[in-house]
Image 1 (cartoon, one colour):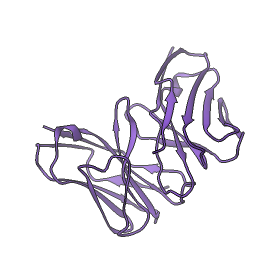
Image 2 (tube, one colour):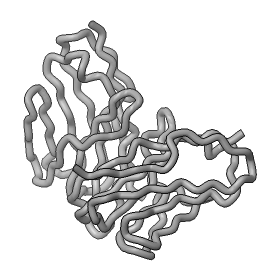
Image 3 (cartoon, chains in turn purple, orange):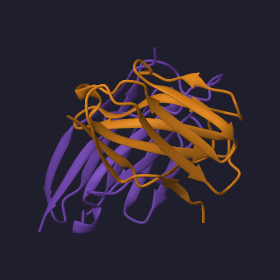
Length: 111
Length: 113
């Protein structure tokens, strides 16, 4: 079955430092979504990437889809304490209704 | 706003008991999903449904069953709960196929003693 690796598993940063999480798939993806889960909360949709090489920005967050559509990254510039949480990628492949998730990267931001 | 309501936030059950977790959505979404979330393992798909009375196994269906008699309701059933089913269970819905965002409920934390 499809395997999705997300790294790192944990990341502690000082407030103001940058942060990046990576999602790697063993198969070519149709699209990929990213979600954020605050401590004690449920996952909330951030963005969807569809095109090869696509880059999208949301304020301090930059999302990228690889040229081969097998990997993706989320980069946060100048982290803030409000960025604390777990970030999940959720890739999909064509021909299936399944939404599966990466293992997540838990981000802690030290003030 | 989409509302996804899970019937219980916290449950404590004994080994061997039958457990029902219910999920109701109010946005007429076709697709509904059940995940379990465990530390270090992320969200793992148990079952999903893309239409009434339709169900498909996810990655970890063993020990679980589901029911979708009405479009808005998707139930997860543990026929005989075991301690390794202690977990956070999350229900989600989506309108699109592979392209719609998932909307999650608040989660049901199940402890099996």
